[in-house]
Amino acid sequence: MDERRINILRESRAEISRLQLLSAFFAEDALYKIYLRSQVIHQLFENNEELDIDKLELFHVQFTATLIELLRKIKKSNEKNVTLIYDEISLNKEMIRQMNDAVFSEKNFNIDKQRQSLKINQTLRKLYQLLSDHIEDFPFAKGINTFSSRYSKDFYYDITPEQLSRLIEYNPADMYIDMHASIERKLMGLLCKHDFRTEFFYGLKSGQLIVELYKFIDIDRYFLFFPSRSAFLLCELSELEGIDWTNDLSEKGRIIQQLEYKNDKLESSAAALKTYIPQEIIKLLEENYVKISDINFLNHLNNFDVQANILKAMLKTDLF
Image (tube, rainbow, N blue to C red; front, side, top):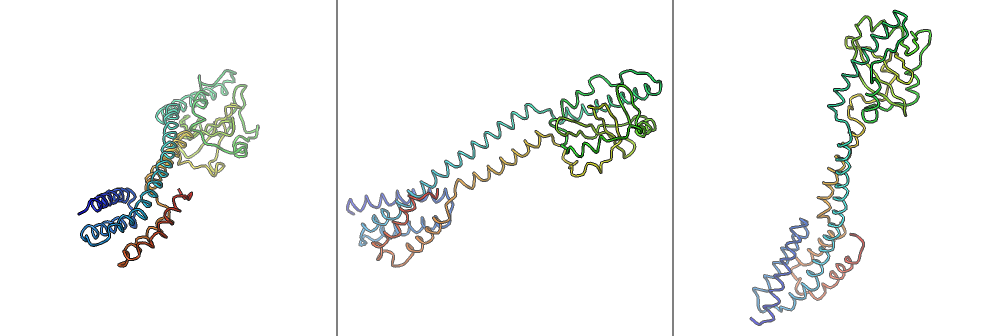
């Protein structure tokens, strides 16, 4: 076997090995079939010394080398795009970390809800005593507004100004009015009847105004505390249509959940994008496979430059 033949066969095996690695990376059926067919063509020349070895070299020069260059360009472009995706994932993770550091935990919120309920119940008991004894004293428990200032941004539900207006509307004739607070007469009657047993239900906000919603423990009735007017009023949940009460995540908690969901989608996109081949090129690969599988392929090898030129043209496109 002459030296030239040995060198061409060695280079042919190297080209096929490179094509094998790329076909394994992209896992595209058309590409894998081309790789297998290229092996068959190589074996044909290696096992038949009477065949013109220059045709094998021509096949690789015209087709295999250009295909490998095209696939490497696609791979490089994909890797660049995947890097951008992972950069976004990294930024999202950093934002999640910062928000987790800043947000009050659900555990703290639930503990402080119980404390706030005690403060409200103590305040209402004292207000009842002050109204009964006609004493003008300050009824509110110490730090009663701290809860809302701490948690309203993250855990209170947004309502419209119209909803807020309906909630806090009242007839002064239906109220007990003290110099420090006012309370609806029917509400005070219910509180006395049920021994001031209430619990924090939900917080509401409209712009800078907040409302705390409370529920009687023993009956399905609700009332609100409106700190801006120091008012306590009965409330019907039907006035708050459109609020998803099942969503108990804080505002930041919801953002964190959205970012985590987005990152999951980005991870999936990155995995798919890594081995993505444009449909136009897949179609071209399928056409090329048909041509190199033709039993008369070797007889028309000199005409294969048309397909090679199409591959080379692909290298200059903006598909990737």
